[in-house]
Length: 131
Image (cartoon, rainbow, N blue to C red):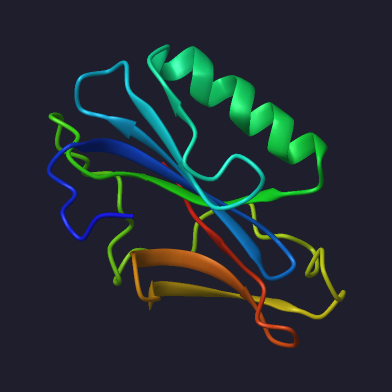
C-alpha cells in the first residue's frame, strides 16, 4: 500500500472480524488494486466491473463494506448534513448488532470521515447518513 493516493479515484474498505481488505479504483478508471485478504496484490484493468465482482465475492464470503469514499473524485461532494440540521427521518428502531437504542450525532468523526451518523449507545455500532 502506498503513502501517496494521487492515483486513486475511489476506495472501498471491507472487514470480516479483524481481517480487512482495501479495493482501490485508480484515476485512469480502469486499474483496480486489492490490498489484503486472499487476493492481496491482485491487479485488474477492467475498472468498475472488476470492483463490482470483487465486492460481490467478498460480501458473499462474509465481509461487509465498512466504508467507501472518493479519494480524488473530480466532482465536489456537498451532501454532508450540517451540525445544526434537525435529526433526519429514518432512525433505526434499534441497533442491528446488539439491540440497544440508537442516537443521532450530526457531527460524528472517526479517523477517516466526519459527518452525520446514527450511533448505538451500547456496542458503538454506527451508520453514516447519506443524502
